[in-house]
Length: 109
Image (cartoon, rainbow, N blue to C red; front, top):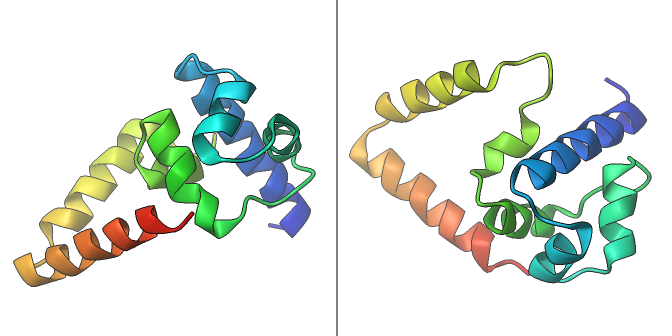
């Protein structure tokens, strides 16, 4: 997948999740700490989403981070099952490391 196509697909996914959450672009922008125009650019695939903003977007939309990357060619319930299966295969130590990593990602602003 070309970079430009990826930006468009993740932008479409972002818009889809935002609408499902019944959140305006303005509300998402406020929750993430960016301008409303930035959210519009993301949703239209014009600009990439900064890595540090991904946890903030997920928190504002009240979804797990991986849901931002579930595109139309993958069913969400299948992705949920795969995610759960993956976590069930991890040891308690590995889960602790993953949990701490997610906590650190959420601190990035």
